[in-house]
Image (cartoon, rainbow, N blue to C red):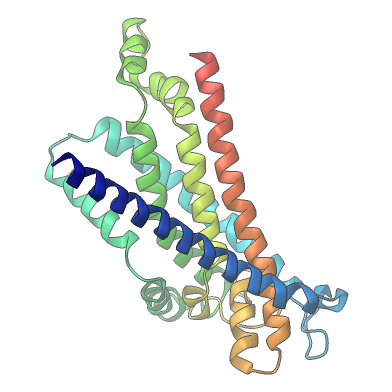
Length: 280
């Protein structure tokens, strides 16, 4: 029996390390291929202020992406964080309302982005008459990342030890002050990581923006102007079939930004977790 268990353990250990090795190899090959094809294709003319068929500039798309990211987070973050606070701290634990909200949040988190794009097209582009514009894209992305922010904030709030809250109440501190001075600072690392992950999803999003903000290669001049993000820019170049190398260059920039965001998320979690441990 012991020999049988040892053989099974070795087999499972071999399967685990094999899976890790395969995943790492695929990851390295994908990144290496994109960077190998993209970096040599980058030229100074690809960062011109205006786009034309000669320079195929990605700078307008990069600026549009920055605008879209900040506007989407500005709309969705307060709603998501305060909504999660209500669900964790104020809503009844076994209420049907809470169960419904959690079910909807989990369901919306798994919906493909193109469904959000079609929803944004029908609601903001057609019904409200915003057209293919900055407003349509931002509102659609805000709805798309809202479940992720709510879910990550809920998990961060629930991970705070109960003793923190009980100690605050024992000192006579009210619930609202306890939330803002004790619970939120203690869960800040999880909340920030959720926001950064949402940022990465916005930057890499193309399907939802094609149907809402459009594919026009210009910088947004107003909220009702059409414009493309960096991911949409890359998609447009590939679909045209004339600027494959420039598309690889845009992909390499997009890849570096996403990697930096993930690194920033990891460092922020370590920083705030370390700070909380020192204070404790």
